Amino acid sequence: MRALDLDYMLGLLPVLLKYLPLTLGMASVSMVLALILASLFAIIRVVRFPVLDWVTRLFISFFRGTPLLVQLFLFYYGLPQLFPSLTLIDGISAAIIGLTLHFSAYMAESIRAAILGVDRSQWEASKSIGMSTGQMMRRIILPQAARVAAPTLINYFIDLIKSTSLAFTLGVTELMGAAQKEAAGSFLYFETFIVVAVLYWLVVESLAFVQSQIENRLSKAVSR
Image 1 (spheres, helix red, strand yellow):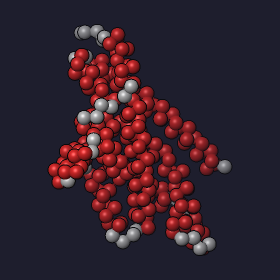
Image 2 (tube, one colour; image 1 turned 45 degrees about the vertical axis):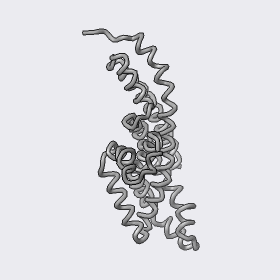
Image 3 (cartoon, helix red, strand yellow; image 1 turned 120 degrees about the vertical axis):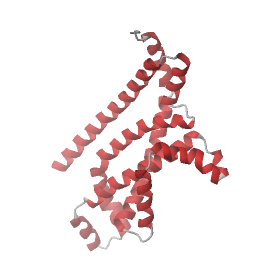
């Protein structure tokens, strides 16, 4: 059995680290946009706006029921056939759009559950003092729901970071794309993918630590 090329692995580490900011940047932008969309979808589902509720249900069903890779290919390779102007969208933009829409569908259901989990007395008290639905959501319901949904949303962010590895299929040279190119050039596939796996693992473990700290603080706040 051939021994691992440790010198190659150590030399590869700083090369791949240069692409980590792009991976984290794509994940962060997608997370922010997905959170905005998911909150909007969740409110529509809770309030049950006519027509919009049906459209939102269809959106969530589609993006939860189809693979992320298929969605990325659909946005980057498929839609430009129908709308030629979309050929101007680069791989990074297409990946962010795909990740945003995909994860917003999952996050919307988590946020909706958190909203519905707010005690009904809070809803009734808000209405009794004359708050509109918008004021009630913004000032009373959503802040409480955010505390409940926070740990789950961090889990989605972790999944989102790992899912950015699919962006290389659109020609994006992020962490996984760079690893693929390095492996193809050196033929040291095992060493290359061990290094990239460790990098993803360290990022995820860092976020898991942050998540545990947030959960501890939230549990203390609730127990007071």
